[in-house]
Length: 229
Ligand SMILES: *Cc1c(COP(=O)(O)O)cnc(C)c1O
Image (cartoon, rainbow, N blue to C red; front, side, top):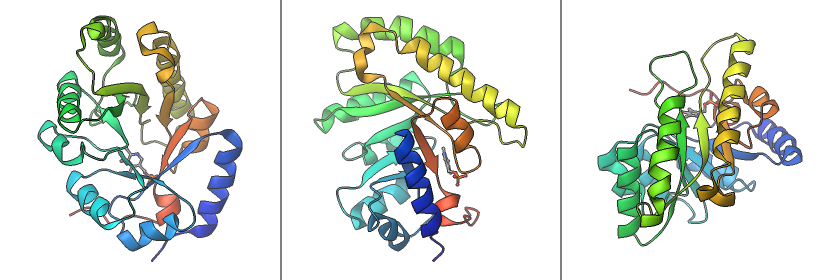
């Protein structure tokens, strides 16, 4: 077991001082490893794969707040809708509609972040700026008709380019923060639009400098991951 307790303690101390929420990214890690951080007080954990998340949810304490941070297929929403705490990775309206539907079935409101494509890489999912603008203007202005009664859109999430170019990463975070600020003024969202989820092990300090109030950290806490088969 390679959980790095020293690193965990240091990061928690650093983030507490800055009022930034730590999501411990536990994908591919065992229930025992998660429990060892749980025993130190960690409650927010992030997972990428639906099946894995469901298994861990069944095995682990029920006061864990499970964050879904990976690409989510519409047909799998029903598996996590009963318990997921926050979906970071909403990348289409179709998905949003499905989350709303499953929220309704489970008689709960599911909190969501819209994922924004800020990186240079083609492979990263998410809305671009124009799609986000259209979404906020058109979709949310229809919200009074009860279109999305079982979700709340509480902020934005993004992933910077995978690169050593710190300036590029900083610019991407700045860009996401500007979209966050711009869209948080939509009155329909009230004060709910409060979460800016950006930054991982390699770039969370930069992300916080650029306004992140939630970071998703895996390998600094749990050690390197085995590549997924
Ligand atoms: C895996 C993952 C992380 C954590 O990555 P680390 O580099 O291990 O900190 C954060 N966010 C998302 C969306 C991820 O898939």
